Image (cartoon, rainbow, N blue to C red; front, top):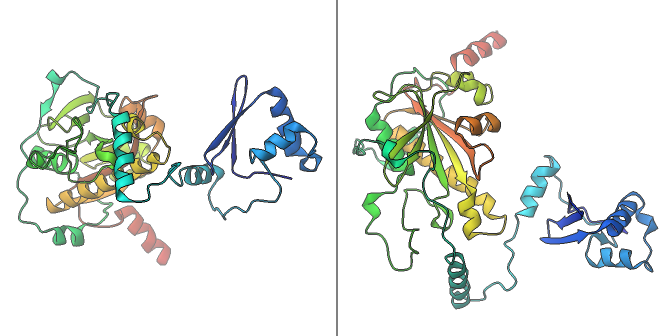
Length: 357
């Protein structure tokens, strides 16, 4: 007999939870079963078909009669567990036609709407303290084609101030609830889920939020701000960190003078509310990707260079955003500002020339 390679074992007093993360099945083992499983892990050949515990472990596919093939995986086991564990949406009876899908989805939504969704706004500050942003300005007749072809990742910024008007346009067009789409609603949209952004969102939940890292914005004190999409406003979260931004963002110090950055976070509690299965975790990253690209295209249309990264110290950023031990977590960072358009910082260019000579 063999131990199923797709098992994750979680100690949870008074026993063990054995999770087959490929088949989405879980089993709780008491001391006797846990002890026997430990023995079989060390001595698979000690399997005894006359032992009822061994038989039950086999029936539960914790043990397998033949070796189970697994894909080659270049990363660690944690990433493998995440990817395979979120494959395939668990569904007892996949709908066979559009009528069945409609019926199943309506039943699911009705069950979800029996409870209220988590609040759709940052909960850090009193609404009376909101800083209203300027009405978004019209872009300079910049076509989507121009923005797409001009967008590039820059690592050389002048540090020049960004105008408050540009901040308003950036946040509204990437994260705001577009007032221009208020009429674009029908009776199939559940109450409370009608807000629409320029980027798609899984389940219409708008489960991602944004926190502005302001270093040099004309008319706005340096600090960290939460963006309120419904009000198109900011609320002050706290002062800038004592350390340089590069120390938060993987040592990438070429962005220390970046005038404006945006941490994109995921409201996991909103995703949990509608989607109980862990596959929805993937949707948080997909949505963050949509938002970061939209932010970059708007910044490009406004004449700025952009930079983005997923390399940061989660612990420090969570503390900065006041999200310690919170259901809302940072996923991505994107920034913009005046740039000379260089893809690499001057220090790296100098080093490359030195190496080449």
